Each structure stands twice: as structure tokens, then as C-alpha cells.
Length: 475
Image (cartoon, rainbow, N blue to C red):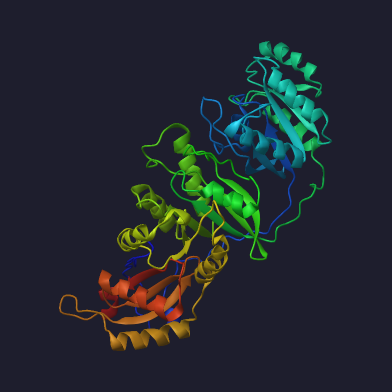
């Protein structure tokens, strides 16, 4: 657990006479950086409840998109990396498209329309059993005017006897209807072959991003994550509604902020514990956890106008467990009066005591107040998360600390801290080699002094202790 030192005692490491004898195996410095590679985008579109997300999961070969047997579960356009026959592409799931939609349904439709305009190929999914509806015909009219290659997938064709029904979809004017069953996998391979044939060799209007830093926006439902995403992008990238829980899937966007490109991911708000959630909430919670683990820094949004809740604490625990850099953004600051500020200060001391190191920013996603202050907070948190202290610096500091405040006695003996090294970054992980057990309070003391000396604001710091085996010392 980060925020508090962790003990890992490993007897039997032997007698250490110099640095080369100190065993620090098991701590790998994994950066997780990958070069940005431009890939073509395939948009999966269609009216609600025709099985778009099920088809996405079938193509991916795993359950990524949130699926439930009710229409409208997918609301934003969500991107996944897919591969078929050795060729990679981006698969973009969208919400159900309906003409003349109002309210949130209209916002969902706009996301689907954007996907259709910007993709390198489009797959229109139609319920092959029901046949072409007025909505399907409206989508087809839009797609026929597009220069983008379009493939027509007749879904829910579970056996050969039903293929005749799929033939009626020729009337949509989009070419051959390709019968598939997203549930059983029937025909999916043929559809994928056709997708690869339709894709251009060079994706349009896309270049490698050069590895932007990855930022996850997390928090309880209706705290303002999607509003912040839209403020950052300067558009309606995420569907926003007064109904809590509008976002179900994590959605990502490249954002220009502070003169640089960042990759922001908006995640679902977590209502319940993962093990008690059901249906699409359960899978949405898994996607949120995956988004946190894939991020480098997390922005935890907390509603400053309301008391800090158990939901806030659960999301915070996920970030701590993942060991990610952290910025806490107190949103809706425009609703906070003098009395609430006084109460909030008390709540922060009490409820956020696990992360005194986290950077804090007061913002209003609705008005845009102080949103630009996120940039220096993110920069400092990431710099701390990436920081490496040389062994010489660390041990010079350690000598001074031990001389001023030696470890407390344990069982009538005082353990010696013989040597220290930084075993990893992201998050910074330190190993202290000792002749005896160090009390938890002393480990927290070492972590606090590390932070003071080397400035790890915004990042968790993990302190591990390895105790030399007594029998080895006797040899």
C-alpha cells in the first residue's frame, strides 16, 4: 500500500559486505511507455440494442465493451485496440444512433455521427431478424453520402436458416449484407476479412502522438468528470446529463493543454463496491479500474460543495492500490461559501489523511475556473512519479537521518539500517536493508523524511525493508 510504508522482510539474503552483495531482485523498473503507432479506425454504428457492443467484444476476443440486455448502455464513443490476421486497427464502439433524438439521446447520436465522419471504415450493424427499420434507413442515407467505406453487418443470424432474412437488407443500398452472430461468433471472421480489405493502407488525418502522458479522470457519479473533459477539449467530447452515471465506458481524448498534448480518459462514476455491483455497473467498474492502471497520473474529482463520501474513499483506494501519481481536484468550487470552506478543511484533514502528499486544485469544470492550474499540478506529480535518487545521494541522506534519529529498540536490541537503494520508479520504491525489524512508525518516519528531502509531491512512495537472516550473520 502506498502512502504508508510497506514491510517486505526476506530472510536469507546473506551477509552484505558491499553494495554488490545487496540483493534487490524482484523490483523491476517498468515504465510502461510505448511508441505511438498510427492505426486505422473502424467505427461500429447502428440504432440502439442491435448488438454493437457484443460485436465489438467478439472482434476483440474479450469482454471489453459494457453489454447488458437493455438499449442504451453504451453512450459515448469508446476506442479499443484490435488485431486480425496480423494487422492492428482501432475499433470504436458508439452509442445508439437515432434521428431527431432529444436530450441525452441527441448527445449520444452526435458522438456516433462524429465517429462516422472521422473513421477510416464504418460497420453498420442491423438486427437481421427484425430487418431494416426507419432508423436503419436514416443511418444508411447518411452513410451512402459519405466517402468512407461502409460494411453492412446483419447481426443475430445464428444459423443458415436465418440467412434468407439477412438478404432483405440489400434494400439499404450499402452493398452485400454480411450475416454474423455476435453472440456465437458465426461469420465474424468473414466480416473481419472484409474490414481489412476496406481499410486504407495509411490512416487518414492521423499521426503518431509521440507518447502523450496518460491522465485518468475518476470520481463518484455526477461529480463533473465529463464536464471537465468537455471543458478541456473545448467541445462536447463526453455525454453530459444531470442524471448521475451518464458515462459507462471509459472514453479517451487527446487534449492540448499547457502547450502540450495529453491523453485524458473519462471514466464511469463508481456507485457501489465492485463485488456488490451488478449488470453494466459491474463491468463499468472493471473498466474504470483498468483505466486507472493504464494511466500515469490520476485526477480524482471531489464535489467541494458536498461532504466527502465513502464513494470518494473507494475511488481513492483504487488509485492508491495502483500506485499512480495523484492530483485531487475539488470541483464545483463556484458553489462553495465561507462556511463550507471551513468545514471542507476539517474533512480533508480527516478523510484524506492517507494522501497528504497529493497535489490539490480548486476548480469549476462548469465555468472553467482555474482549470489551467491542473497543468502545473500534473507536471509536478509526474516529475515526482518519474524521479530517481542516486544511491550515493540516498545513503548520504540516510547516514544523517540515522545519526539524528536511530531506529527504536525492539526486543532490547537496536536494528541497524545498513544500506538503501531506489529499486524502481513509477512509483518511487526504496529498499532499506537492515539487521532487524523496523517498526511501522519508523518506516513512516523514513518515508516522510524522504519526501521532505527529495520532494515527492504528488506521487506515492513505497518503502520496503529487507531483514538479514540471523543465521547467515553467524557464519
